Amino acid sequence: MPAFALPLPPELLADWYGREGDAVAMAEIPRMCASQPIAEDVLSRCGADAARVPLVALGGTIELVSTTSFVDRLTGLTVPTLVVGGRNDVIFTPRLSRRAWSLPSAVPGWSCSTAATRSRSSSPGSWPH
Image 1 (cartoon, rainbow, N blue to C red):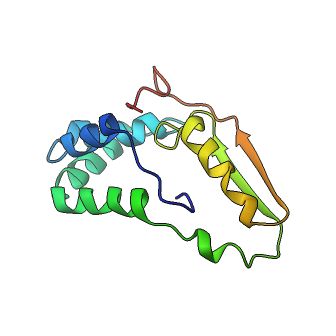
Image 2: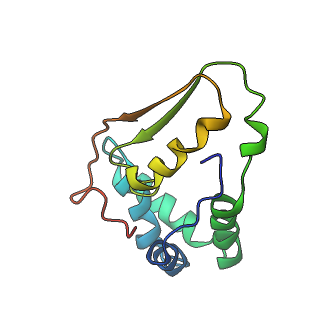
């Protein structure tokens, strides 16, 4: 989760809300984000469970990510801080993560890295952003 409020693109929000009640669509999320194979039966159970999450809870999750900020709490940090972003992250894309990297002016001694991860997705970054 980013340290600052991160408004998400309307396309991503529409995609997220559109998955409500759809077990197959919900199972696609871990499939898109996984760096190694996940057994189909596990994905099916995950999708079925996630499809039972009501729209209000899906909205609450997005609300938390897109409006919560704890930047004010970072100014007192005196320990080395590393900000990490995944090159193939389909939700917090490198483009969105770069906004986070402008944040650490409040954090002395910060550094950042974009980690190279392998995605099994046939089209990494296919989540709308």
